[in-house]
Amino acid sequence: MKPHLILAFAIAHLSLTQAFSQALAQPPMISVSGSAEVKVAPDEIFLRVGVETRHESLEDAKKQNDERVSKALAFLKASDVKGKDVQTDFISIEPTYDSNVSRTKPVTYVVRKSIEVKLNKIESFEGLLTGLLTNGVNNVHGIEFRTSQLRKHRDAARAIAIRAAKEKADALASELGVKRGKVYSINANDWGGSWNSSGSYWGGRYGGGMAQNAIQNIGGPSEAVDDTLSIGQISVSASVNVSFLIE
Image 1 (cartoon, one colour):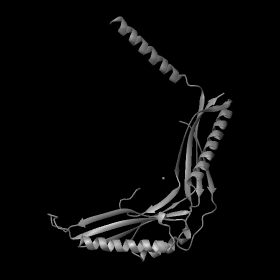
Image 2 (cartoon, one colour):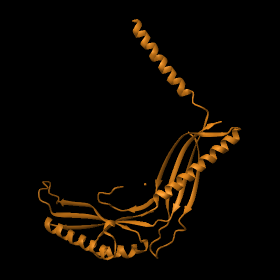
Image 3 (cartoon, helix red, strand yellow):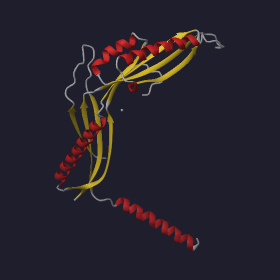
Image 4 (tube, helix red, strand yellow):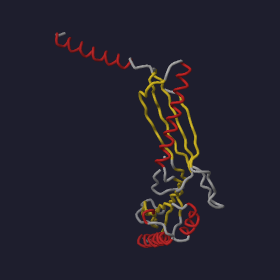
């Protein structure tokens, strides 16, 4: 082997050895995880509904669908639902055929449109849904309960999770006869903030260490809005993984 190749190999081997040694030479640490779940009374409802029409004529199927959708949108406007809180988010036109293998001539055309409505007044949900069903809507895809204060509740859950992790680290350090030092590394995750129940949604869009958990109720007790709707509570959760140096 040539001298310059031997030298290059030795340098590369030395670099790898140093890197491996540094990776093994981590300072003594305590690694823990903490998680928290905040229970929140929802203050928003997202309602997904649809209009479906069928006719042997494509033009008539679309015309009937447009009329039904226009009637539903007019009802929402008359019910003081703001335009920014209403969105038609799915449209499809589908030909259907008979059992003829050639499938060259459609028997009917199916036109579908979906409408998503955001409600800030939960108590108006039942009346609004009934009104939509009598003003053109013939499909209910589902409802989703949300909180408008998601960022606030996620921050609260994360803070509780961090406190839980620190308490766990302190308990471990005390049992080991050492002292918890500064944070060496940390990562965090959060999820939740809604609860949904969806039916058949056309084109649907479908939230090594030791752990300590905490649950906290925020926003007061959940209540039934009327005899047929109970909003319950939704969960906003966060977790952290933290490594503390040992002093």
